[in-house]
Amino acid sequence: MFFTLSKILWFFAEPLNFSILLIGLTFFLLLLAWRRFALVTTAGAFLILGLGAWTSLGALMMHPLEDRFQRPASLPEKIDGIIVLGGGFEGGVNLVRGGYEMNSSGDRFVEAAILAARHPQAKVVVTGGSGNLLLNGEGDGVTAPRLLTALGIAPDRLIMESQSRNTYENAVLTKEMVKPKPGETWVLITSAFHMPRSMGIFRTVGFDVVPWPSDYRTSGDESIGVTHDNPQDSLQNVSIALREWIGLVAYRLTGRTGELLPSP
Image (cartoon, rainbow, N blue to C red; front, side, top):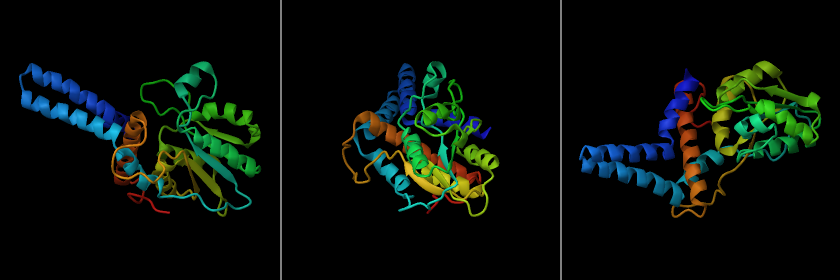
């Protein structure tokens, strides 16, 4: 229920979708000759799109998320496992074509391959099924072995979890699968903007991990004003950051994390 409800609510809250709905509502209001209300909905749609595409709003919303957890200066010589949260592959494409096409979060798997090469004794866990409510796609836990073995990681080092649909299920199912022991070192790789919520969830389920953020979307130096990024990426940053902040609130209210904004 939580998964389905979250997907439905986000469909309406996502800035681009919400703007389109406002524009559709504008036409309906004009049919009713409610011009003042139509003016409000039109202005709302253009305000959302304008602020998202042409200003640094998205980057500013990202900064507290991306800066919250830093990579450690060094890792122990021996680490027991590397956990990669899914979301880095184009599931719909790979389901049909059988490859390992990556999306903008594919840096997660680049970092995993680098750490796996540095720590050849560590297991590599990829957790993530299909997180889409309606669209068919191959889960990252299915796609990842094709990429990681092609990059030289031995198949017997790989542990795939392909049933989880969100970050909470990532943590729960991964812990059940690998059964971490006291004193072991497990490294968690996910996008920097997603690391605060991920760390909060892993702590809540009792799985102690070392954060290894990747896939940064901002330089961290952006200030209030006109964006220096392209409009598409700027609007996407607003959408990603808004979703993450909503997720932090929702997971805190439902007890999936112990803090609103988990700290190092």
